[in-house]
Image (cartoon, rainbow, N blue to C red; front, side, top):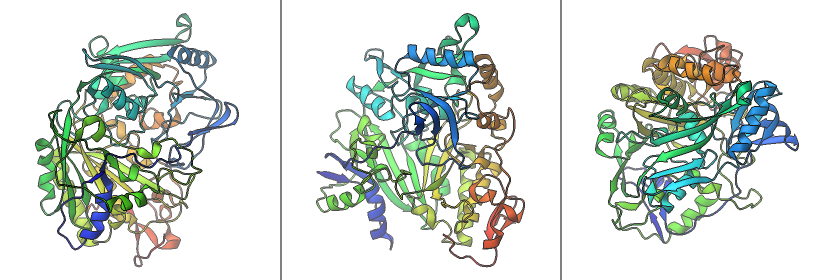
Length: 565
C-alpha cells in the first residue's frame, strides 16, 4: 500500500509538478527498492597505507586530491586513544573521516602526504540507553539512521534532524547540521546533546592522548566549542543525547503562488513546528510544508522517503507504484522516527551499480554545486524580494534550480555553540549544475552567483560549514561573535595544530585565505571575479556587476545568452 502526498495544484504545470513533487514525498508501508551502497571514501594503495580521501560526490570544491600516509579504523574508544597517542607522539597531522564523507568542503583533508586519516566507520555502537532519563549515548560513527532507530527502540525520539540520514553523529556535530524549526531549542542536532567524550592530543605526562568529558554544567566553554568543532579539537568518541518521548507528526503539503512569499516566510515557522518550503522561483510557486506534532496515539503510519535520496532506478518503480495509489487526503500522519529523515539509497545490497545514490561518483549521475546559507529572519523579506527582482529580469534564469527540486528552505535558531547559528534565520539550500570541466561556464550562472553574493555580503548570511564553495568562507570567522572563545579552546586542546589543516586554518582566520585566484576561478566559486580572465572570456563570459546588487561581481554572458553545457 502506498500513500503519496502531492501538493495542491491549480497551475498549467500541474501535471509536471504532480509527477516531480508528488514523487518526492512518498509515504509507504512497503519495503523500498535497495541499491548499491556508497563506496568507502578512503582508498589506499596497499592495505591501510598510501591513502586518499574524497567526499561522497567524488570532488571537493577545488577538485584537489587529499592524501595521507595511513588510515586507522579504531573499533573502541581505547583503540582510538592509542591511535591519537601514537600520532601525537610522532607529531603527525590527523583528520577524522566518516563512513560516507558527506561534507562537500575539505573538512576531511589533512596537509601533505604524511598525515593520518582516522575513520569512525566502526565506532558505530550504542553505549547506553536510559528510557527513564530519556538519554541515549552512542559512538560518534553511528549514522543518523541508526540513532533514530536506537532511540525508537526505547520509545524515544530526537526532536529535530537533517532530512538525510546518512550523516554520522560526529559529522552532525562537526558541521552544525540541522532540520527545520524555530521551536524549542531550535533545529540543530548539537543543541540536544547532553555530554561529549572527545579524544585530543595530550602531553607526555598524559601519554600523548587525553579523554575529555564535556557537558554544559561542568565545562560550559569547552562544551560550546565542541558542539560544532569542525574536527579541530580532536576526535569525538561518544555523544549523549537528551531525547523526548516518541510522538507523531501530521503533515500537509500545499502549493501556492509566491506573490506574498516574502511575508509568509517570516511568520510561517512560528505557526508550524516543522515548517519548511520548497521554492520554485521561475515558476512563481512555493510548496508549503505544514507539519506539526500530534499525540502518539493519533491514527497513521506514514513514512518519509524523499525521492532524491532514493536509489537511481527507484523513481521508475515509484511511477509504477502510483498506478495503485490509495490516498485519502491530508494530513499524512506518522511517528517521528518514520517521518523525520530518509535515505533509502544507502540500503546495502551489492547490485553492480545497477542502482545507486543519484550523486554516486562511480556512475554517470548528478554532479552539482551546493550553496547553503542562513539569512537572518529579519532580512529574509528583503532577500526574497531581491531574488524575485532577478527573476523578473529573466524568468528562465532559475529554471535549472527546479531540476534539483527548487530551493529548500529550513528554519534555524540561535545556538550557544560558539560556531553555531547566531540568530533566528531561514536556511536556503540551493543545488545546481556543476560542469565536469571546471572551465565550462553554466547557463545563467551570473544569476546564481549574484544570489550567493547578495546573501553572504549584503545580508551577512552564515554559510553551512559542510557545504558551499570556497568564496562563501572568505572572512567567515568574523561573523561569529564567539570565535575568539572557540579559538582559545582550540589552542588549549591542540596547541600544535595536529588536528588542523591548511583549509581549517583558512576558514578560522588563523592563516591564509580560502580564495584561489587563477584563470576561470569564479566559474567554480574559488574566487569572486575581478578580471574577465576569472570567468570564461573565450566563451563570452566576462566579469560584470550584478543586476540587482551592483556590488556583486559575476560571470555574465555579454554577447547574448547561449547554452554552453
